[in-house]
Image 1 (cartoon, rainbow, N blue to C red):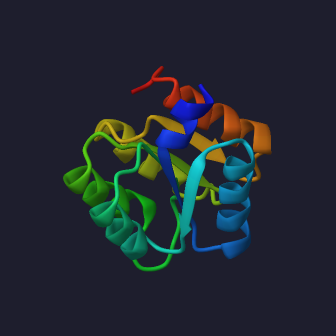
Image 2 (image 1 turned 90 degrees about the horizontal axis):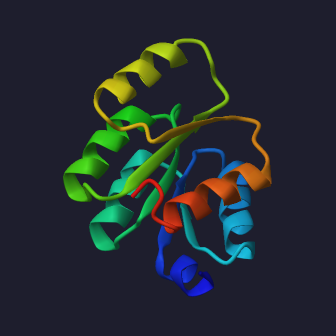
Length: 131
């Protein structure tokens, strides 16, 4: 199992550095191969260069939001799973509905979240339950 975790690359996308770095460090401490970027544009660039099995992505970011970024990610890497999260709830229902309709939302997490929630979600995807 730990070997399987290491082989799966996880990308964390959040424009708030403390949250993105914090999530990636929590995942690294749990044995995952985690990386962090601060924008949708950087996420697309990272996914163009490397394979990621799972992407944790903030929905509300300047420039490209989570939904727009998701669409590009699925063009480049259709097998990557995407877990969206946000602390903003106004208009989130509409975006979540759009994402479900498009088949993008495998899971949705609300901020603030707990480390265990992030680790358990990553484990679920690395063990192939939702792959």
